[in-house]
Length: 414
Image 1 (tube, rainbow, N blue to C red):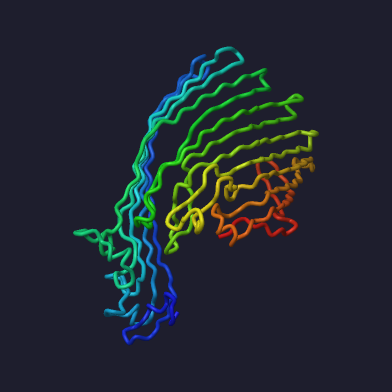
Image 2: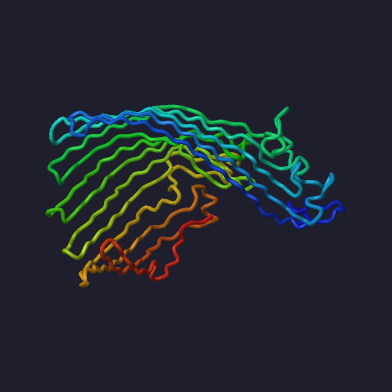
């Protein structure tokens, strides 16, 4: 620290090196107001519809005070050694911001029974969003000239307790989300459907609002899906599933950026193709078997080259992933199986025994290639749970063992 690291800046007024250890005082306050008005026609009509309007406003007050305490001389007290935020002795970094997310929509959906077997659905949702982030973030000018008091807007007044305003950005937009569906009932127990639909997530503003990290844009998902819902053998067997192709446009990707602040950026195009299914079988009056699985091929379909360090092609830097990279946290296969046995115990008590096994395939913790090399691949895992219980008259008691074989499942890495 004394030679050449960031701790070399932490000097008391006598010029002696200070302990640079920090702690954080944080406070968050949330408010949310959500309103929806919906009108629906009687479901027994051949032509049915639902229409409505939606309004929502969410406010997040963000306060984070990174302190370096050193007795009576916090971060020095006079220039040139004073690194404290004005008005906050001992505070190296201050975040004092207000995030406001405003959403509105009008929507409608109609269903029409072409025949007793064939039903069509069409819907659309028109949305608008207006998301803002306003306030202060950064260091004192004695510590940094790129963010904080050195970049205060000319003429800005103190915001809450912060000395000035150096962040005032917004992300806004509007659009339409359509949906089309056809479902065919062969009989009351067997149905096949096909769906085309679109969805989105609104854009927003990065808390590190410097020029290298502009507001991120909305991302959009177009879904093509073919599925089935069936029961067999006098309702003893239920089997549902779907195959799908999801085209993800401009998708939002987050990573840890400078000053340990999460950065959200738009990472381009991706595709998720897969098969999902679940099954439940009443093997006997007492024994029920159930399970499900998903098989996914989730990958980039466009090279990701993010700010500020992507320098293609010879030196891609940290924010880089080539076309075809598997999306993070998404295993190619995962599944679960459960067996449950119930039995009478006398005196009106009902007992049960249950065993469950869950498997998840290997996954990557990050999208970026350099981060993957550093973190490594998260290995697959299998977890087994056992439960025994009794119940009577709506009351139940259970004993259980989760992860019975003590597998060290890697759930995340960072």
